[in-house]
Image (cartoon, rainbow, N blue to C red; front, side, top):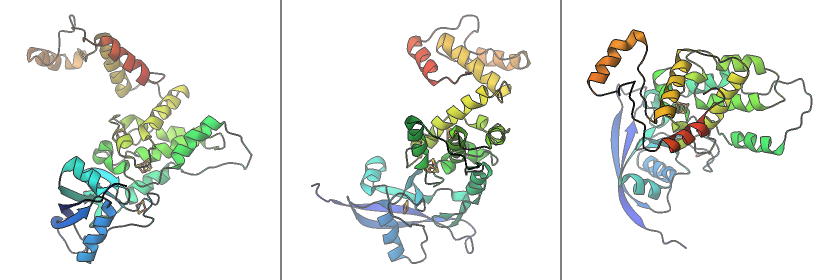
Length: 309
Ligand code: SF4
Ligand code: SF4
Ligand code: FES
């Protein structure tokens, strides 16, 4: 049995009450913590010291979604995250913030209406005429992985595209859309897949940073499901070509040939390209040096390509 240890930690905690405060502020709580505690224990202790401190919790079993917060900028479920692991990662000064500071209502509690409205917009329910369908066991395995999504919004509030594009539906909605697009029972297929293709809201605005897969506390891998939706959109003929897709095709072509990005650009931005070349920011397009590990790069491109790219 591992011996319980203790340590002094300073928690810098985000405070804001939308009814009273003009601006948020941070409050320090210095306390002794044990190696067995999780972040939710710390929130409980802060609440014991200061009854005005607000946060959400329900199941304490990583299954209700209520207790998601950010520790030093890293989103997590408070009832699951060990304090010891956080100290090992960040040291003895830990900052606790809500999932989204700009949507804070009171301390850790945020207004998730934007996330829930977008989630609802993809019609996250089965629409069927009641017929019975059989699924293969490998298909069921993938669907049960998606079933473990607790709609916590951790992926949504970590997505950099959501930060800059308020129309972008976000990873959790796409995961749920994939669930129904891949399920044979659902009969709204055409409408839903067309909606996923909409400019600015749709799948094509994802920048494939993998942050959603990194932070998901339930191991759902949203970007993996979104890549499958990309493929579906091509197979169904909804996605053909756009400025964004042509750009991606050029990038893939350049990296596949040379192992580095060496685009000349279009005639319309030739002068900018020449300026970049003069400053040493791009290679001569007619004599691009190949990367030393080109074979490995080409294998990576092969393994991460969709049916179109
Ligand atoms: S991979 Fe796409 S959806 Fe996921 S966090 Fe990055 S931009 Fe957002
Ligand atoms: S995919 Fe993961 S992070 Fe996103 S809402 Fe579901 S459980 Fe939360
Ligand atoms: S309290 Fe339910 S997931 Fe943490």
